[in-house]
Length: 186
Image (cartoon, rainbow, N blue to C red; front, side):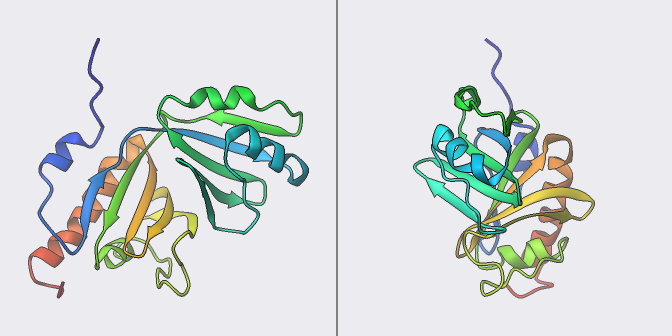
């Protein structure tokens, strides 16, 4: 069996040490894009094991799953790897569940300057009063589309297409180098 290598493994191995904003390669996961009308969302969520929330730009967590609200009828459901069979449990005519597990990868950034590093290439207001823990949004990071999720007070989860992951990682590294190099006070 061939061992799978993460697309960011080489970049992560050479990442600068920066306690103010730590970058991590997040483990593989099952990723499902769910499109459902309001009447079907509850039954689809029950089949997937996580509530498909109705609050705009907020994530709902249940057990080891999360449903990130991306639009009025669209969610990104994250679950542990190898649970893509979840999609087979959805049996409703008013919903679509598509496994996109291999399309994207995830990056974590945490620390007291994590939001500052993100704002080096993204214009969202990441102040906790505006983008609190649990908030999520599909947005641009530099020239790449990402899904940004505020997971903890000083931690963010980034979902990005595999082909753009090195670009996003290198942008974050550039911002972190400014912290390490002393141009910005950590």
